[in-house]
Image (cartoon, rainbow over all chains, first blue to last red; front, side):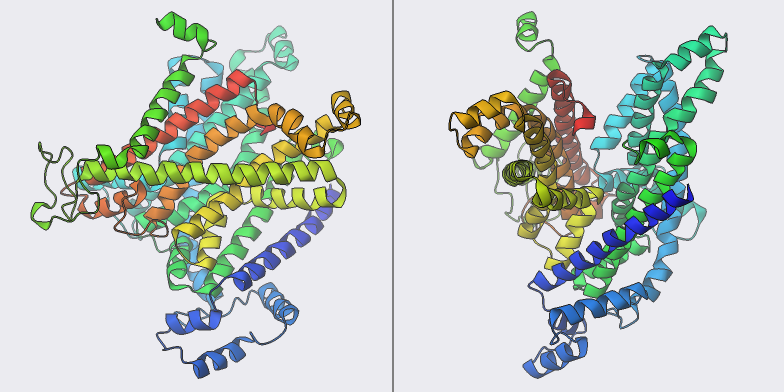
Length: 314
Length: 278
């Protein structure tokens, strides 16, 4: 097990390395000159002399490989440079915005797990019943509705029509409800579907027959035996849906004026704040790699057959 | 009549319904200049935020532009770009996939690792990253979406090529002097067309969602052009007084995406393409 973990940890390094390389390459292929972007963001008129001076300051006149090694060295130390717009270190700003995004992420994961686990199991056990149709309906709806539109619909019903919840901002517990709901609908759609499929698959297995033959009650078979194995794909799904969550937070933060990392990133895109964009991409890459690792480790703990079979292939 | 349709479609009338409705959308998009009652960008400030009437069936927006005409023209952008992205991604995907499968060795490894990398990332983040670095704009979005979508086609083609490469009919074709290109065209493509149709359908839906999300963020279609995502964005300012401004385009996006998703699923069931293969 320890060897396995160590192996997986080492496998991360080249992936992150490639991620830094790609980000660096993109910035350099881009027609936007960082020096010019800086001056525009800082509202300084880009005369040739000022541009030249800024390029020197950023080290853009050095050979590419030197620049890359320098970038790499600083990224490892979590130094992403200073924002063009505010002139503050990017990492400090990100640190102050992250908790807000995490708050949304954690709530929506919890909420969607709470809804989708019972719903997924029920719709598999009572296949083709009304609850199955309901859960499939939700899956379709969640997979096809544009998230930003859903957000505004919720604002329209709960804030404008019923006047129950605040429209935007962060602070109160009431502020969390609508963004969480918006994010969760998409996740619930994915999770419920996944769980339904995997429970249905497990119900066909011979151990279920055996348990039935032993006279165990159906309910306890489903909850104790089937769910334990069927939940493994859901854990993978949760890890993979980090992507949905991350893009979701970008959009939801925009809709509800939530002061998080996603909104900061979108602002940076408009202002051509390249250090912030670089930081976000790198951060997203790290998040994925780490999530994948954690997911694999949890799965191995649940289902040790993976260690024997080699890498899991969900 | 219904029975006949059902027989002809192998029992999947769902496919027919989806196809008919989607063709209707495409037809509207194609014929927009002829069916739209007004110019979608013509400003008429005297008539702004008008309620539905016989002149403006769905009312007007905050600049007095006719909503119905804007919705019709919006279909052009969403559907047109989805098709454009699909075709170009397909072309790149099939090419790379066939090359990768045929060549094998280190080239295959490098190309497939690249696909893994792109697939591991959520599409929209990659697209936003590319748009962030290259700057907002329609071309950048098209390019970015194309860059993230070709991998799915490439993977399928490559796996198909590898599984077919060793089969005797390919060997026979080679011995009888067929060029690699002829083999790809005659033997590989017919074998991959079903999974490709399935993925293509599903990806059209995703592309439409992504385009509208990017336009909503203000990174895609720039005003005054009509696009469903940006129409929702403009409509949200009047969420209290004129909520239908943001509701109409949203309903259309959802409808089209649901149709694509339903069609994709129905097709995958009919062709026996399982999701796991994709």
